[in-house]
Image (cartoon, rainbow, N blue to C red; front, side, top):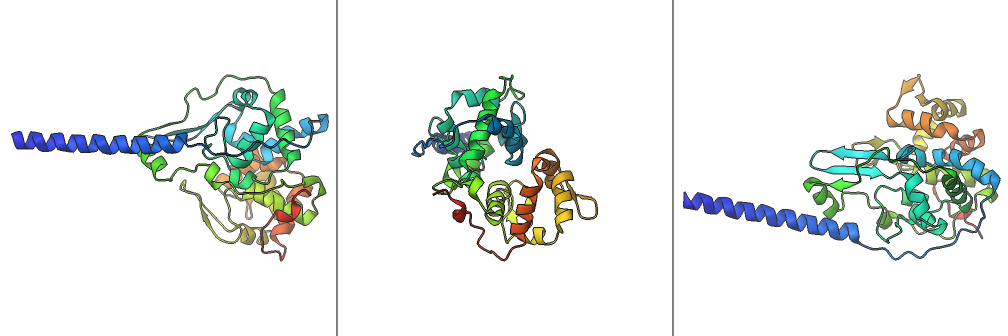
Length: 288
C-alpha cells in the first residue's frame, strides 16, 4: 500500500511539474517583446477616406474577425478561447502609429505579439487603406463588449502556445518597406496587392494550404483560373461557387465582407490570378 501511495505521489508531482513547465513556457512566449519601431503614417485623414473606412474594414477582414464589438474566434474545452477584441474599446487606447504597427507587424502597444492578426498578409498594407480604416474606427461610438470573456488558455492551450502551435503574429510578419502606394498602382499591381493583403492569409498562390484550424484551402491561382470573370464576380458578391454551390467559410466571408469590393477590385484580382506573372510579389507597388 505504501509503495502504491509513493508511486501515486511521484506521478502527481511529475504531472504537476510538467504542467508548471508548460505554463511557464507558454507565459514566456506570451510575454515576449518584439522591438519594432513606430513609423508615422504619411497620409492625413480626410472626409473621403473616413467614408471609405467601413468598406475597407470589410474587404480586409477587420469586421469579419472582430465583428461590431468583439468576437470569439476559437473555443475548445481544455484548450481555451481566442477572442478578437472589441475595436471600439481598444482603438482609442492606441495612437495611429501604434495601430499601424499592430496591423502590419502584429505587435501590440505593450510590445508583445498579437495572436491570429494576419500581419504577414498586412505587412504591405498601404497608408491610404490604414488611415481610412483607422479614421473610420475613431468615428465609432464605444460599445459594450459583445464577448465579456477574454483570451485565456487551458492545459492543452499552454502546450500549443509553448510549442508554437498557436499563430503568433509578430514572428510571422514579413519585412515590407516602404508600404504599398495603392493609388499609384497599375491594375496588375493592384491585383497583386489585393491578393497579398486579402487572400494570402487563407490561401497560398500555387499550392493547397493547411491553415492549422482544420481548414484546407485550394491553390488560389488555380481556383481563379477556373472561373470566368462573371462567375468570379458572382462568387465574391454572393458566396455562390460555380454550380450555385456553397463553399463553407468562403461563402460566408464573401457575403459578409468581399461583397463590399468594387468591380474594379474584383476584376484586378481575377486578372492577376489569370496573368502569366508567377511571382506573387507586391514589391513593385511599393511607395518611392
